[in-house]
Amino acid sequence: MSFQQGISGLNSTAKSLDVIGNNIANVSTVGSKTARAEFADMYAASGGGSGAAGLGAKIAAVAQQFGQGSIKATDNSMDVAISGNGFFELTDGKGIVYSRNGQFKMDRDGFIVNNSALKLMGYPVDAGGVVQPGAAVALQLPTGGVSPAVTANASVQANFDSRAANTGDPLAPVIDFNDPRTYNNATSMIAYDIKGQEVALTYFFQKVDTDTWNLYASANGVDVTGGAPVPINFAPDGSAPAAPLGAVTLNVPITTNTAGAATVAFDMDLDVSGLTQFGSAFGVSDLKQDGFASGLLTSIGIESNGVVMARYSNGQTRPAGQIELATFRNPQGLSPLGDNTWASSFASGQPLGGAPGSGAAGLLQSSAVEESNVDLTAELVNMMVAQRIYQANSQTIKTQDQVLQTLVNLR
Image (cartoon, rainbow, N blue to C red; front, side, top):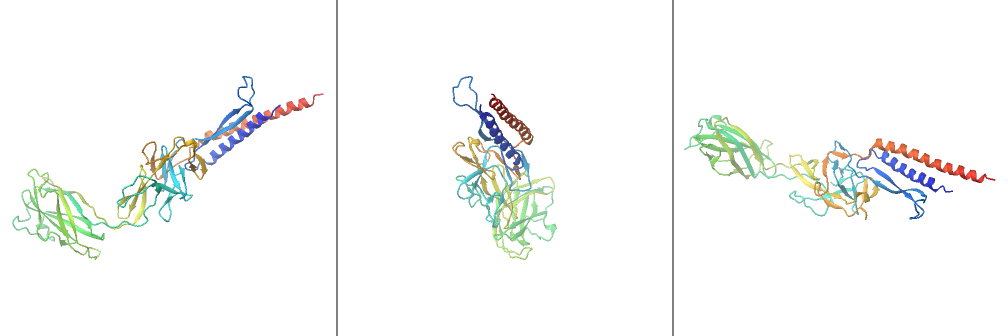
């Protein structure tokens, strides 16, 4: 008589309980994937015929199930969840491992790391902030600030009231910035010199004739046009200036701003093509300029396509890199390493790297993590079933023992 079947049942069921216990233990582990014990029967030899009795059961494999876990929002802007296929690529400088756990933070050197100090990999950017696809490297965020930029281009969109009375002489234009009676309307904006110092620009609009206006400008109260206005001639329908076409150049001189600092002189092109002259009240719809002051890094944001955006205190945002995701033809062939990581293997195939949303890779969701895909209710039911199976296998051993005892007691 053989106890093999019962023993194999006990062993395989115990291993199944180990798998169930591990699943339950990791029900709150971010990015964890449930595993399943897969059984196989055993026979002494193949081709034993229909009457061959089996030798019991064994664990053929412990297969991980890489189904999508629920997405949970968090308060950390550097937390990232993968919605769809793919794994984060992490490195310690010696090798690459893969993970679905997107709980990241920035270390003192600006690298994006996980709780095991493994660095997140992706594509770097060039000096102009353009992502450079290619070989993935450890992503390092800028720890310094952003340099200021001088205002080189500006634009104004506004409507002039065609019904307004003339406030200037077309032959001898004169304006007093402190006397509103010498101009019709005015609007202001902030520009920046090469040092990032603020320059308060004010545009004054003076009607001198039907469809003809003069543009004056001052910087921190200093006349920019030097008393020679820029004439703006509208088309008869008032839809857009017939002259000048495009932009006019303003030479902003050295001034003293409200902070008491001496600004640096610079030239600026002002686009006036957005001006109109219709029979409605004066109104400014848009003022733009491309300069900015210096700024410090304040926060990091991650787009759905993996682009890491650095946000600065001056309102500027710049790409700082792009996260790469790796996909595998056979994810179940990955070798678990612990700490929410896996290693590629011959069974999994080679990793296929790409930007999120490209190929088979899923998209990213920032300020969120992917919860474990363990179904706690199902695991508790599986545990009860495994317990009964274990008890049943122990009963077969007990029965075998009783039969053997009966045989021994025969006289």
